[in-house]
Image 1 (cartoon, rainbow, N blue to C red):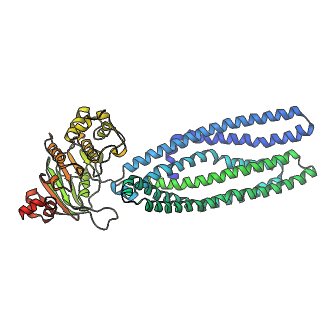
Image 2: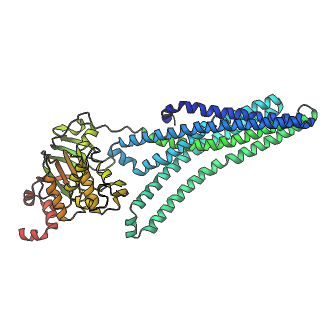
Image 3: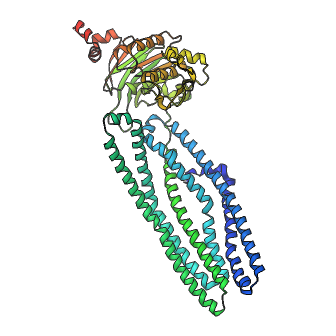
Length: 574
């Protein structure tokens, strides 16, 4: 929690005024038993109705002023807690966006979602309650004890004996439950991951009729989470009964002692009532303190998890070189290995792509095609060898500037809720409508968009679920082209297109003015056969490089892929 306190610096005033007004409220509350004592000992004893009414009015006034102080304290505490959580959430998101692909893969999306939402909400609640009660409750407890000593020393010794016992119970239970709440939050990560996976893959679940199996697994995990929560809850639940028992025993002792002293004439009935009220205040505040400790325990566990994200040092594999790219890409004996993987995904890859060339990349599933193109913008650093852009190592470039010059069409067509225009402007926020239509024409989707009732303002649902697979792919291609990139990477992004549209798209890319160096990853031999050079990958190794004609003569892997898709040509050549 200490590591997150820097986000409270902007709310120093609120952090001071919140507890201050709570202490003022507590001060007024401590005066109430004395007023009640006066009513009993003076007003009722003397039959002075006017005095009783006057003291009752004083109590009402103390209550109103106390309420005003409480509302003011709540305002400052809420402002500080919400502001703190907002700053923390922004900082965590910014930090996550600065992490490398490898670090994000290690964390997992479910963990990041839980820590950005549930964990930070728990911390926010903890901060709010801490500002309101952390000083108030101890102040009332010890204030009531001091007030009791001003009334009678012997009776007050009961207070002095009870409070340390209660503190030991409260803090002992806190130490036991804190690791249990950490375990609960970790289990929540797993449930979040399963929920996200099931919702995103609901169509696949239904297609394979796996609903019952997934439901059983989900129920098992939620039952384990419930068991963990109940275990922590049972221990936390001991707090209230224990404090009630101890306080009530103390009340019995207090009343017994007070009754003896009243009969001896040492104390008045009103003062005994005041002592009882102070003991009741202690009971109420210790219950609040117990609940506060539970909330603070959860908040501290969640704060540690959030701080763990912020403690991850971003892998900086980039320098400060700026400027446009000519488009030359060279791999020199490059090896790439994912964190935790047993073997490299790419081994000893070497090739050169000249500016404006089209490079096709083909190979079987898991051969390393996506890994290769992800190494170009530096998403995954080379474990060995060098990735060079315009004869400079990719690590010499400023990462944001570099990626502005590279257009990437990912394997999965990802669109965001909004409009077609808003999605295209991700490529270039300053692009005009004319430039957007130009990119749509190059991506072979201008006719579809112009046929829509609202054109560029047509709505896109989350993930582009209101569009077909081919439409989503062409819109993501258009988004990359809006950037007018120096290097264009298309990672199997035409798989949903028919052969005619795919062919038109490739012709449009070749005819672009100042055509970028284009990398086309595909399972289709037809999509890469016209490339200036084709890279053939198998199990992370480059087993062939050349034109379509050269590879048909020299590369057995390429022959196998090509003739499996064009068997008639295999018969002719055979």
